[in-house]
Length: 272
Image 1 (cartoon, one colour):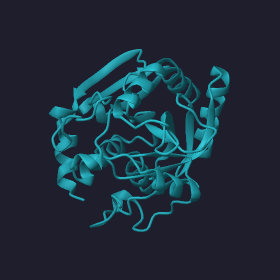
Image 2 (tube, helix red, strand yellow; image 1 turned 45 degrees about the horizontal axis):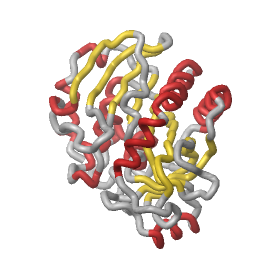
Image 3 (cartoon, rainbow, N blue to C red; image 1 turned 90 degrees about the horizontal axis):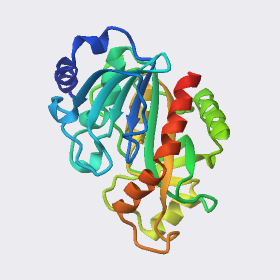
Image 4 (cartoon, helix red, strand yellow; image 1 turned 45 degrees about the vertical axis):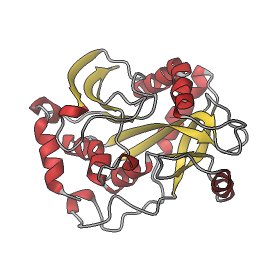
């Protein structure tokens, strides 16, 4: 990856972003942009102004970086993400994680909306990601290696922190939310999966499927982050759902779940 792209993006952010490491970094995916509550906002920057990142192009992604405080913790939140299917390079996809690394952040929360594959799931449920399957076959770490990004061949035995998963479960139990651990299958998008593909993903152990999160998780794990992943089941996957799939369904499901999404994130922050 091109280090210069990261340098130009990080150079655009004000110095206050790099003065003290955030306690938690977040990438808030489809529908999650408004889930973060803040006691005090320190910095607010639209993606469109950050060199090499560019504005969010997908509905449900606000496209704004926010540095704030909540429950006495410093939070660096990316409200929306860039996806590989948008035609942007890997640098733009993992840019939020690299900037968090440069800030000294060590803890990362990744969120997304997904299609439910496991038959026990229904729209509005939450899945705490315990592992993932990269169906794309591509990796953001491909190319020239840099020591600051960890080992050349990073271990991926436990990408998602078991401790963070316990904190999320504790919060979900307190809030009486429907939640389960699960495996997230990553596809390139932008088209939804075929029924045959969904049955294949189910056969190899996937519980949900989506078009994000995994590139950031791979890069973050290589860089030494502790990672939590939460997926909102916004719809049933192709062949499981009885109707055609549409992004509007994803946005509507997230809007309906706005309150529990915010409550779950807020509880997680309070338990750090």
